[in-house]
Image (cartoon, rainbow over all chains, first blue to last red):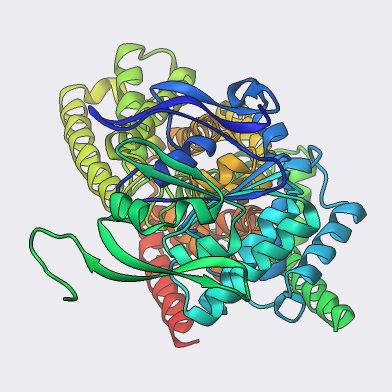
Length: 267
Length: 337
């Protein structure tokens, strides 16, 4: 197995959130996890970042469980961007991006010329050149997200894990960030695993979709196979129309009606 | 554009380094002033003579036996408290944290008291007692407030509660065993009055180890500031690193307390002043805190010694009078920007 989950089960206290999930993420492809709120998507990602410890099972990378790697070795292979980030208020973009070189840092040494080349290059390809001396807190939401993504790219990872990378952004920045992720994925041949709530973005920017329901994998595969009105009704309890986006060559949906105990939408 | 950008970036770090060097020079000047000035003032030349030539002159007695050890110990105490506060603010990810606000000082002095009462003849055990007390108090408060990340409010509240309990114990010990505590004046009063070479030598090893350990901290600390999840995925073992930091900060705070007692405020305001001056990058923040902590205590002690015609005001009192308004001004200016 290149990268994936093996029989993972996650509990929060006594409540079981995820049960016996096994999935392998295809190398060099983008896989997006979708599912209702509280279905355990983020928890699955947090197992990768070790913020959540599964009660059973393990995450596997290159045939070995993550536990058998040194943390710093892992940080050179797998980069992770949580949904909410903290940063000191007075840090500039370039400094933030440079933190991505931390796993490569030799003890007692600063950034090498090679590190600085990587940082320059990353800043270039993420379009941050004009922003590199700005303080992160003065950036707009979309620019800030780009800076954080640049930091993870500086780790030169093989696997990039993103938790809801576009959740707080307006539609323009959503598009921009998704295009950036796509570009980076292609240029660096990254294996990308992310959680998205927007089904249309998920469909358009992913090679594979993974839907989570009832503590386990509900369906997995090509977006065309996952985005059908029957399956979406099962996962989200919605009725929807599915159309073909011929330009982007992917399905897109218009939600129509939600099955709900307390509210009736549509007719 | 890139070239221009790079120059900007470099100049800001040059600016910070220059500022830190200036702070160290000011600290050195403060040290000279502290040795020269007092109830009896000497010129710099006389002071140097007093330091390096061992005759039985009055100058030699005052400068070598009283002022120099007092100044050096005060400076060391300032460095320790400032570093300790700096690190604690990072560990707790809370700008209100400091050895005094989260109860470390009271815990440290409690165990210090116990040590003095239990082993009255073994004064040199005092720092070990204080450090142990500081460590377990910090750890306790951290664990009390920890629930998938540390809540800032919880830390301060549990720190205050723990502090109150220990202060009560301290008062009890003071009233029940006054005779056994007679040996450790500075420790009891929160002052540098009467601090001599033996006190400096007593805490020097602990303080030096603590300061040396701080050299390993800055870049990792910057990563920790990005949050546990981010730090983890950048290869920092957050839990063990935090424990290490708590240990270092207790070592520093405990060492300081065993000489100078409860000097509040330094551990809180110095990191703030340093942050206002050089920003929150720990590579600059720690050296700036060292210089400022050193300078602040020496200056406040000096003021306490010379402001009254007879007698002196303890350094902790001066710190409160001088430090608090200064700090408020800085905060206000920062807001205005």
